[in-house]
Length: 161
Image (cartoon, rainbow, N blue to C red; front, side, top):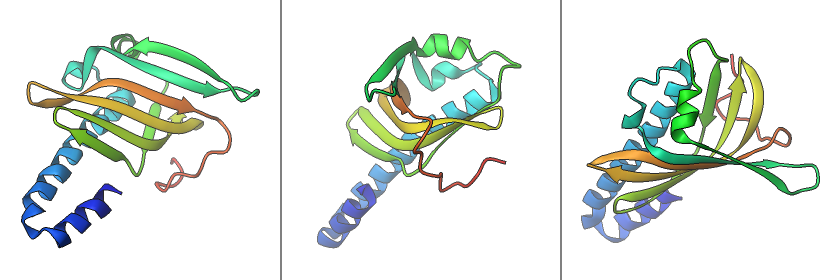
């Protein structure tokens, strides 16, 4: 949707092309931080994780239950990262079609995702990343996600190999 709005703005106001390019580069910078966080999870290389996320940030999960309600869990980003010890299960989280909303030094990214543990499907849902620009660098402030094990749309990235 963001790209459609930008395209309309470019047709209506040719002088806005600098704004559109700047906005898309910010979106790319923000998504690159999330991709780096997923890579950190996969490699379990947590050495510079504070370059990607705020230590006092939180991760909240809403897991669907059989009665239609949700079970909520939370963990600090720091505790989550500390649990990514070498030799643990292989984690592969993939997101697609991320939508970013940006205003000044804050942003939100919303995207469908799936998670595989040791090559096996674990769950899917929606990831929502709250981002903040800290000293000129985008960082993850908080993560909120849904988790479901059934009714998942297949990833456009195909099966995990």
